[in-house]
Image (cartoon, rainbow, N blue to C red; front, side, top):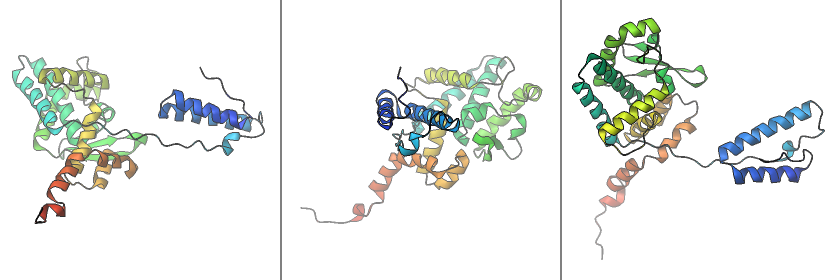
Length: 269
């Protein structure tokens, strides 16, 4: 465990910050430095120290950019197809409804790009089954509308609501588990693992990866990044721009089909 530095020794503070960088990951280091800065501010405010040396120390640093992991389009198709197959094979109403709920969750994750926390927290009043829009309350209680555009997804959402209408109206939650309680993020993760095994897909997939795939595939389809930003509920375009770094397939398509060099008829020696 690191000992706190001398509060009035600038070199000791710099050495301590260096040790943090050596021993912890960037985000952890940044959090620890922020806590230390707040502590120094408190000591200054209470007049326990005369000078806040953090005012004289530049502790800014850039975190390494971690690119979002996406699911290949073909893998998503295989995964969802496996779910629909299980639905057709269901032997009982209980099994059928369970798969129906699972399909609805995955279809909405992929077709709307919502966060898994936003999806699991959906209330009945947030789902418009006439215009097929979702009212999403995102980070900072920001509200946004997401349209369900695919007819197949609309159909499965409608079928799900019909099957679970009694529980939905009695609990208020749109997604409900077998105990008639809110369906949890952990349950979605376990459900994904189940269908990965059934589909024989050897890939670690998390609920959030459907959101990453939603954004990346739309970007590769030439959708304006500002529209993607609004659909994802990002307050800053900089957050959305990270997806431009993972659109390698689109980049390859552009450079192999649209670059002027591909249309030059040259007499190569």
